Length: 331
Image (cartoon, rainbow, N blue to C red; front, side, top):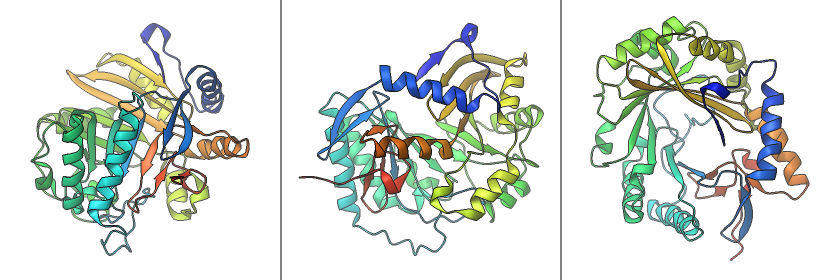
């Protein structure tokens, strides 16, 4: 993705969001093409060191109303054996390393720590390849103990408010006990009535920073892909969405924040700041726009890819629009 320093910072707004993403899309298709072969499928990554997202399981102990990756009905029994899942993960790493690509790894779910045996096998593979420090785990903290042996991995701990009661409203259950370690980043989805202003962002960071958080990640509610048919989540996100662009533009002009960097992709954007010496990241994605883009690309026989996703079933995808992005092995 392209990087913009402070003197170049581009003020994104609701009004120019889609035009900005469209302009970046055209830039990437022309200037950022990194062809790779994954299991016999030729794809073109538009970021050289692509993000490999590993969905270890869909079960979660919470029921956040905005989440489209949470399967409350799941029994917790994954559809393929852990060993086979780990082999597929290792094969993906091998395929990328053999083509000069050093991927970033995001381990997620559902709630990944509900699958400790699978997590342990993934960590072993990361260590075997010497890339554990390029990995992070997204968790709500229900079973942090299983992550203790996994040195080098960054923990992204979800807490959507500094008030435990409000966090529990969002989670739909009681907050788990947790210890914030030296590699823990607190992540928060911003919503109306919860963390929805710069003042609330500061209160959140002052609270969690005071008990040891290494850094912070704030997300605006994404414009969801309605093609995935999660009507309740789509409607909730639309009702609770704040003007994330306006808030980040306000942050830029706040003397308590030090701007470090802005990066703009073809369907998402993020900015990095410092607040009281700690790194703060603001991120927004538009998956509805991404579906439109990838649908058109596939119709034209183009296999541009923004991420590689290994799902809990063992299937591999060249993007988040699952119904049109499956990579089917040809050998």
